[in-house]
Image 1 (cartoon, rainbow, N blue to C red):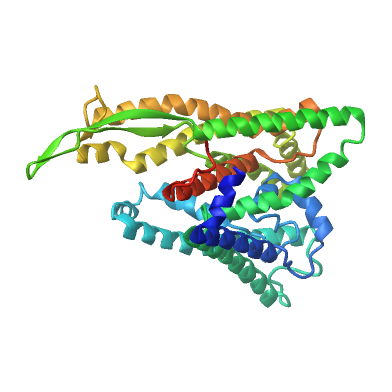
Image 2 (cartoon, rainbow, N blue to C red):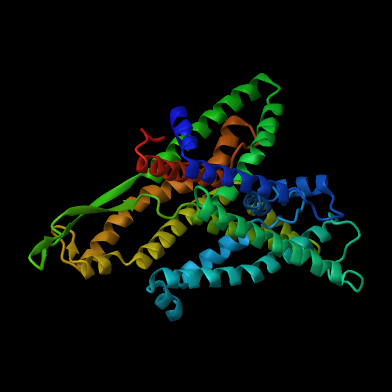
Length: 432
């Protein structure tokens, strides 16, 4: 592997791509360290660590939320806009037409995604600023008061501009660097927060029992990483035969290929969906706790206790929601790919299956069976922090389930791209 790294730096254009990616990551970390004035950093850090939703948003911002930096929103509004656009494509006829127009249509849909990111970033920025102002984490600041109207607009526009700047940096990495830019930015934020997480984990292991708990917890994390690699790489290959065609006296086709149906086609999207819904009751309860009505406050307290991330019922509901969203998102992506129609148009077919509707039903049955493994695995990974904390008695988690999926997935994808670049130049790659 070290020789592969040396070979990568021997190639001028590949070396330029790697150095450009590292430079953009350094710029991202610099932007994420510029805070909004008047923020109680220590209080904000403690408040973010207590909220699962804010913890997830902090993950996508590269720890920029803990100091409410200009990049506090991270790329989460863009990810949300991308998911909305992807889900709306088969529903809205105009988007469906654009998706069938090739690269030009995809560019247009990408432009719509950028436009949708702006109002989502403004809305998310206002929600976060309002929440922090109510908790007294932003000193001497009331949102949209007579004296703070313009400063509020300045903060919201700054946060939105920070998100769009990160999206721009991500697209630069995709175009001129190595890997998917937005994923690389999230990856960089997670890796940058790992030293602090490791320090907190080691600090909590002062007793012998905690030391054994930490070792066992790290072993669980290692097994989880191995499982993520196996599931992400796992696929069912459906054989496809291309019919022979004779044109101008030449025979075309007649070869056999395959359709790779992945065990986990949804990636980390089901986890994001499930977390976003599971934290919603807790957010409502936090607003109701300030009510003057005692019954309302009591209901808010019950709701908060029931939907606490450290409870058994929360994780059971979380598990089944992740499994359900995995099936839902996988089927949405499969319908958008239009594999049976493309096979029929190309004169290809699955041996023993009629083209068209029968092929679609066959592929859906296969995808449903193999997705069960991926869905159960994602659900297990989602509740694994709770299980690990209960077994090891170590409450400080090194990496969350979403973090593990992102880190391992981005690392595999980046290494695969470098592998392809090296193989094109007759060098032995990273994967052997």
